[in-house]
Image (cartoon, rainbow, N blue to C red; front, side, top):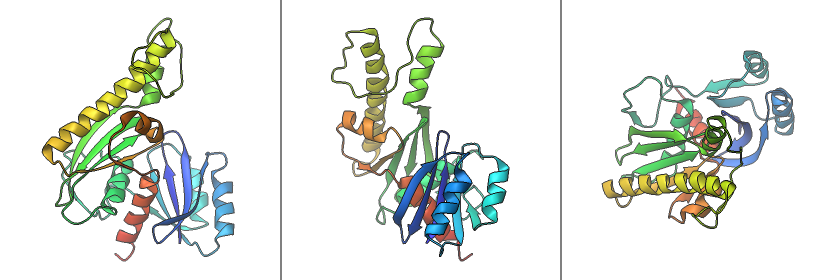
Length: 243
């Protein structure tokens, strides 16, 4: 059993994971990070190692404090990867590495997949049947779309995401919801259609904070996997631990 930590742009998730089973998980904050990690480690004293993936900010002193409690494995571009990275940039995010690893741990031999992460940004990542990672796309997520409408106009209110019954908005608020929710829904549908033209049997994974809301709008066939990031971090730890 190990401690798995996902430091995202908007939240921090910690989990006790054993044999790809999430035994316990919770969200925390920078302020409560060490306290919550210590409490989890007290609950599972057999944990001596942690696997950490960071894209959001975390005070360095918190990492140093954590290192006094457990040995830390960090996900980054320098670790051994279970796929061939064909991305022509050195700035591939640690979160995308972990998500791809999580999807690979779930697919069969000779299958290809598209991973959609609906978080602060919406990322699309494609892996072919030979486990070559090609990249994909990055798009603004729901919160960024709502915030941009509010911040870059004089009168539009700041709203929070909600499901919509109709794509025709009969008020300013309803029109914003339709534009944001329906707009992103159609984007995702169009992206899935493009990839299915490339391979009709492609496996679609969807994860991230807005995945549940968007999945009710999409009505499309894919695997909703809320713990794909945690799965990927754990898989990368296991893939590298004997090196």
